Length: 331
Image (cartoon, rainbow, N blue to C red; front, side, top):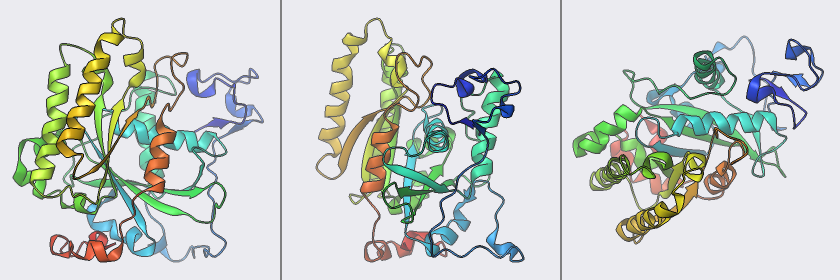
């Protein structure tokens, strides 16, 4: 992804250089590189050892153990129906890391899935002929559970890198989990999750014609996962109201405030005694930056993910019967 050192540059909004350079790459402030912070004790990979290099695309479930065995790894489940904002959040998070010195008190330390990140972002730009656009839907593949990877470190100690993997699961797959407890049991990776983020589309929730379907779909998904026993009390749960900028511009916004609060109360009453639940409003890619800034609310969610969780080995060994040869569940 391109970036500019000048904060006021509109490069990532409309592709225009603040200094009037054409193409923008001629500008001295322009950069397409990604700074990767490397711990002092990390050895430089041997180029002759091909096993140390990867294709940069999403990591399938049967390969994720490679990361988990090398370092303590946080697993974050991003759950929700189609176009609820799961992938858009990750693309915006990476963009914020690439275009700022630090974000939310953390710095970017690299990724093994940068090619997939760029492919997701590029497809949306081509479709809209702009640099920032709607995110394409996650593809339904033979492997229903894939992962995107980031290395993240505290700004005050950039050598203390934490591996974080996020599920890349299609909305269609979550519909299967929603509609079948038996299907949910196949989602056993959820037992290992440090965080489970359930997405609600705020725009749909604040539309009287779609809010009931949106609410019921998400609540039924969570109920199915709990009844299947794959969502455990050790998991931190975040309820994420995405596309918050579209809710903010509703003419009758106030009339829906009680509805949002009742939904929060309902979730708290249903699951608050057994789960640690918190609520977040985000606007990963606002349609109008005058309403909310790019990545609104993602910093608070990132802080939650990085400060809480990271299940220990003893806890996860009790889940070994679900893992087969996929040892990621043990770590």
